[in-house]
Figure (cartoon, rainbow, N blue to C red):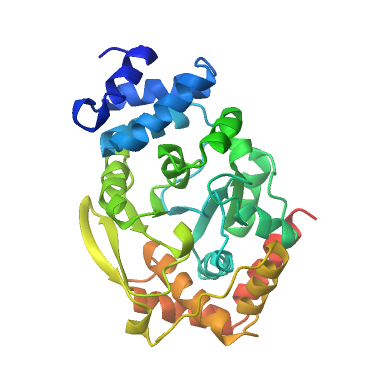
Length: 341
């Protein structure tokens, strides 16, 4: 089809039966052209809408991610045992945002984790990881070099989308006008700005999981867990759900079931603002609230398993409990919060 945005738009906008899939290179070109501001709002909106109706292939997703990554403002870091994970970029509107507690537990157990998010994005425009970190006293829009130093010192880092890919901010108005999820939402969850080789990726719908895992495999991720997390976030589901694991170049389905580990029912606490979410994270890590603790243990155990520190989720939960009871998780949160002071 060639690398002309108009031709690519026509190719994907011919309806469910007549539309054509893009190659990886074509998808990368399209994303680059959009991010670089070469296309007007009407053409960008038409492209996002056409892709929504056509559906995204794993090859197209890989290409869109290529187009994003070619524009990242990121230095080289050691990616070998680094885990990339992302809170839902459009945040949460129904449940308490608690995924940071599991992430901090995993870091206290020895994992190196980078997480990222945006702010005030459609369709939900809910509480994001950035919002909760700010409420915990952690700067959410630190420059790249500061995020790298935080990772080196604490084993945890956060990078805001506006910092690692400022070009995407020009799409905010279009996305607000459209109001629906597009392939950009999926790309953000799989963005991986630090180039980690291990990823936890959450998707909005379970039928996307294998597609996203195949894309991760194509891009060179060595180990990935694709889940349908709480409100599409990086918090492990609170009820029995299928997930997809990429490991040793093999993609297979697994089941995440809290009841298997004696968490018979993990309660989805009702929505709260960023301050309430921060209070819940502290309560989980200081073992003040059993319900929050159990959610954090399950989520942390899954992340510890993904990071290769445990050979099973059950073993990961055991390690999570050890660091929690030893006070190491609460101390890790204090260390992260003190970094910017």
